[in-house]
Length: 284
Image (cartoon, rainbow, N blue to C red; front, top):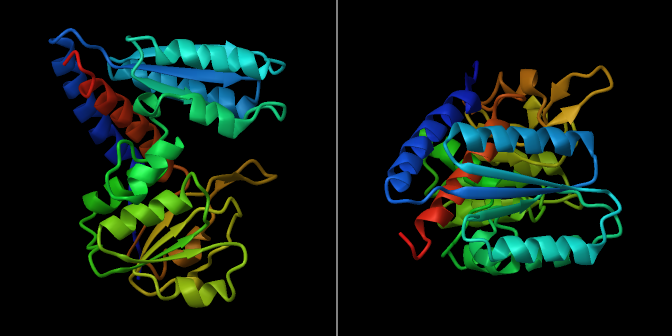
C-alpha cells in the first residue's frame, strides 16, 4: 500500500484564497482584519515564523503589525504593549511569539491578551470554551488538522483517534476537537506504556512530540490516516517529522509530509481566526 499524500501547501493555498475573498467583502464595509505579532528577542526560528505570518497576512489583504522587542524587555513593558493592542480597534488578533525569554512569565503574558483577540486560542477562557464545545477560537495547528481531515473526507464519527503528545498547544485541544467530531480519543504522553499498542488501534493517528521518528510503520494500523505535526531539523540540516515517513507511508492510507503538510495549514488557520475575530467585531 502506498499512502495518499495530504498536501498541506495546496490546501492552505485554497483556504487562503477563500480568506482573501472574505477580507475583500469586509473591506467593502470599512473593516480590514488586523493581526499584531509581538516578537521578544532574536531567536532565529521565531524571526522566520514571524516573517512568514506577516507575509501571509499581507498577501490576504490584512493589516500586519510586527512589534519587535529586545531580549531584555521587562515583563511589565511587554504587558503594557499587550494592553495597548487590546484597546486598539484596528487590531483584531494578537499573537505573542513563543518561546519568551526565561525572565518573562509566559502564562501571565497569554492571560493578558484579550480573549476576543487571542487568535492562538491559548487563553484559559478560550481553552475552557473549547472544552465545553463552544470554541471562540480553535488553536491554529489543531484547527488546521481538522480542516485537512475534512478535506480528505475522513469519517471521524465513531473512529478510533490516537494522539501522541499531550501539550496544551496541540495534543489537548486536538483531543477536544476530535471528541466534538464524534471520535473515540486516546491521548498518549511520555508516560504511556507500550506506545505501539495504542497507535496500532488508531484509524486516525496524530503525532506531535518533537521527537523525530518516534512513530514507525510497524506502529501504524493498516489503512490509518497519519497526521505528522512534528518538524525537526537533523544535524544534516534535513527537516523531518515525528513519524518515520517512508515506513509509515507503506502502511497508511493517507499521510502528511514534512515539510509541506501541517505547517502551512497552521498559518492559514491563524489568518482564519483573525478574520473571524474581525467579522465578530460590533462595527460589522
